[in-house]
Length: 51
Image (tube, rainbow, N blue to C red; front, side, top):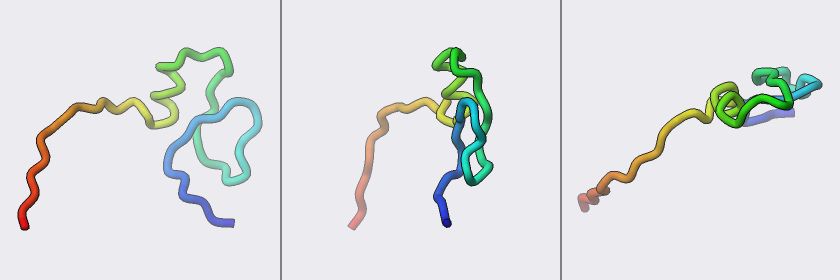
């Protein structure tokens, strides 16, 4: 079975695809974000279209 998972975090049992980082259930949201690869920042930027 295929998947499109690149990064993720999980607690307890390893997912069927074997990917991701095991994180304690009571870890902080910041730890979950970092281990899941979701610790990026977002900022607004102007968008320019050429056509």
